[in-house]
Length: 93
Image (cartoon, rainbow, N blue to C red; front, side, top):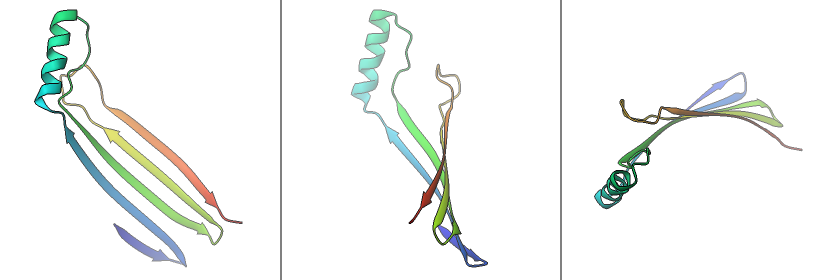
């Protein structure tokens, strides 16, 4: 995380990455259900997310934030990549 002061305004930017792996038991179960039912669905193996956050002090009473996240999937899989963008403002009275 880094912070930059400019004309009495505080800007903060953060970058995060998370990775989780499903157990072999869960992946085997999905493979068996897929082969028995013939239903087309993804087999769980792992999941990752890349998130970026930006926070700016716009005025003494107002903050603005932007949060973006990308959920990448390996090439050749049935699911495509997913993205989320959140815009938020905080107002203090």
